[in-house]
Image (tube, rainbow, N blue to C red; front, top):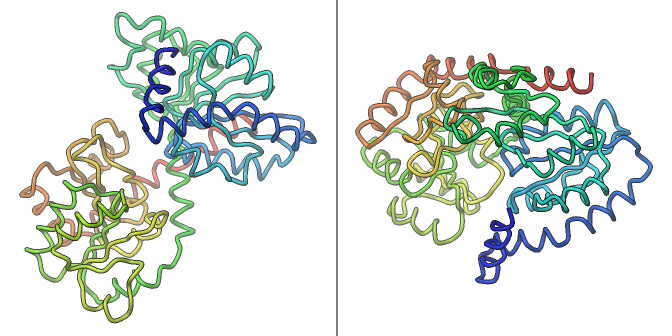
Amino acid sequence: MYLYIFLVWIASLFGHRKARMLMRGQRQAIDELRLRLMRKSGRQKRIWIHVASVGEFEQARPIIERLRSEHPDVQIILTFFSPSGYNLRKNYDKVDAVTYLPFATRRNARIFLDVVKPETAIFVKYEFWPAYLRELAVRGITTYSISAIFREKQAFFRWWGKPYLNILKLFTAIYVQDERSARLLQQHGITHVAVAGDTRFDRVHTIAQQAKDIPQIARFAASGEKVIVAGSTWPPDERLLARYMTETPGVKLVLAPHEIHEAHLHQIFQQFEGRFVRLTQATINNLDAVRVLVVDTMGMLSSIYRYGQVAYIGGGFGVGIHNTIEAAVFGMPVLFGPNYKHFREACALIEAGGAKSVSNYAEFKSAMDQALADHEAIGKKASDYVESELGATDRIYQTLFG
């Protein structure tokens, strides 16, 4: 941890944007937290929830919002490790304080817990910080891990990983996403484990029910042609899509790239040879004249999927695919690149017949043609899978707070 802190500090000196943000946030975290909690001193019981970034926040969110609704006097402290997650949700109004998690040293853990004084601590998915878990255990604070998932190759289960495995014994209970994770833990002597599922499914289901109307996209999709919605795309994804749109008449594309800075939008312009309109520049006349609509704003993707027949999820030709279930919930076939095997829901969608992975253009074209031709039947398999995974929020909440 001290080596990591040193490296982040060095990176911040050399202008690394996220490193600078992280170091600045770390310096301010405890003082800001003290100030915010002083202003909220009327509430007694405190619950601390820690997430790494935006994805883990979405897993915690159903628990937070139900807790706020049913126990309005409880004080909730939310911490992030990632600057991107913190900056996006620092003004989240369902909690009493949002801050960075101070770097996980023994001293920081003691100071943080002296300030927060939680009755319960909840860590989401992959968050296992030894310094904090040890200090929570010393103080006798009830500590949970929720929506967790484990694999054989993780450090906990290697021949040299017993010190890491012992960290898991500090949790009061671990609520895992699937039976495989539970069996793996039990085989290694971790018995305080229960299968509760993944709260993201409940969150995605709620988002789908609250999907916003987007008039420009509704107009674009109203022509009667089938619509592909490509979400969180990167350049390798966009090359496949551009070629497919060139070779396939009678199909429209809504493209929502992961990065919307001007340099990337220029790359997209070159890929599609300028034959598209940007959402921020869309009018009745130019929408009717093009087959590709590029979404150059953030925060709309979960509502956009409802306008399509097939979804393509980006990232699978890089570090890993993005969120598949926020498309699947709308009853759409889902396609993505080859780097998906660490994502339980993507593997399950393929097994259910609601998704396919592609490794090259030939596979992409074949899978997309089939998905467009049979989108209703394939899409039902995708939505049925999402329905089968609902309920994790209620199971966890009833156990922790019911």
